[in-house]
Image (cartoon, rainbow over all chains, first blue to last red; front, side):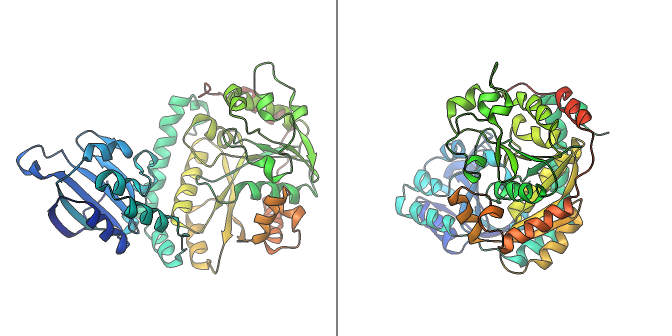
Length: 174
Length: 254
């Protein structure tokens, strides 16, 4: 669902505070892949992903447990981790970031994964900064017809699936 | 005649309730307008319409053997306003599916029904107003999340056979011409108006008055009147609309 980004760094870390702070400072749009250090010798699925929206953690997902949101942070667990940090055009994250079930509160990864309450506070302050409306970014998003069509198709499919669940079938247009 | 509009946005904070009451007041100059807080889970309308202290709300109507809807309908600002209450116990007892009967009853005496819809598509009761309305007013802000969510609302509406009345660009700061032109490619219906971000809207909310009552000369109020003029309510048959609401297939309560 999320395309490959540009790899910024790959290393084993014992403390996630530094990479989280780095992502915040550079207002990174992208994601981090986190695996136990021994994962190269074990299960390839034992990995978690955290996405960033202008440096602020947005989503968490763990491939091994298929859980998202705060439970995924528990699955990612304490380090040391093998960390890969990727930069990605935010347009590719717009659709995933509408998935409420995967969202984590901005300060939670710093608290849960790094025990860094100061960094968590700082992250929350950055997240609370008023959303600057960047007309250029919005226009660029709207020029990406494939991404827009993807949102529409996903919503249509969801509406039709839920019509069955919710008993709205009679309303569905052929 | 009656036409039912749902005022909807997938995202919170777009000024949907302010917009619903503003459109209602503007339309009330020509039509009999009833505004219903269809966001039964997060009452908001009552604070905007000076009804925070009323005794009977839609929650009291939506319970089994509840109050008649006339007791929860208040004549305010030239409209009839039906607010939801804020008590959690009231919400738990209320059956959103009963909304259909309430709306059918209200349709009998109105030219225009405006349903202030929940800012989410996550539950059956949240989607119900979009299913029941004739046309949807999609409220957008010129941001990526708000436009993405607006697109989702539009697809839900079209999937369920509701039409799009148009889009409202709300809480706009600066020049959004480039964004507006692009948005127009993806949304059905006209762009009804571009509403500037306004201190008057916040002040109106604090005063418990609709924007058009609190600051009728403000730029935002003028833009809402322009949007209302573009809506052009249709001459639907009241009995037909009431019957459609009564017989709509309604989901189980959540």
